[in-house]
Length: 160
Image (cartoon, rainbow, N blue to C red; front, side, top):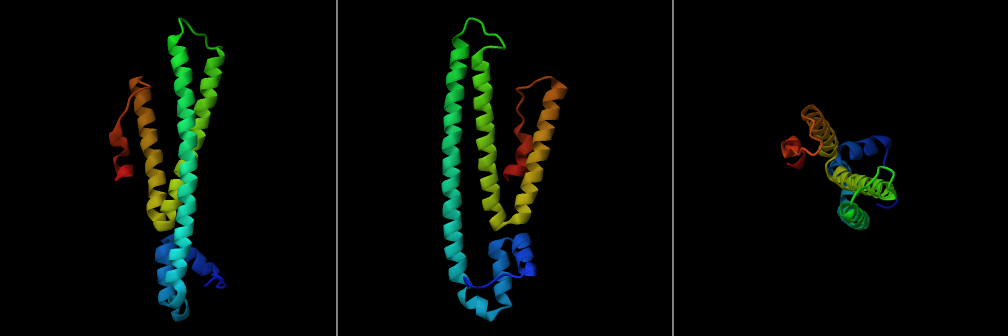
């Protein structure tokens, strides 16, 4: 199987159906491929999933570190008698918030990559659902002049 080269049509099938389902469909029509695909699929899937989970663990550690820095800066600001917009802690907070945002997006991309391998259609739908939910929440916050408003119902279809 290691020497097998997928055709463009086969690659398109794997991309649209996901690797697991796509490979099953390809193997059904190729007896020679059927003989070896189970071992190839489990070995490749095991390796790929392990490396992706390891990547996600590193991203979670970076998220945790950014949150701890944000918490420290926030506590320092909270203890202040007064603070100006030019205070260096505000710049530090922004930098740490940018780090949190970046690592959170990186983790989300890793999750979507794992999901896409299993079910590309659902992954693509989830990306759209997340965008729609965030847009609805931001619009609601703006309309109600409440920047802290939460509304989990916007995310109901995303988390199902």
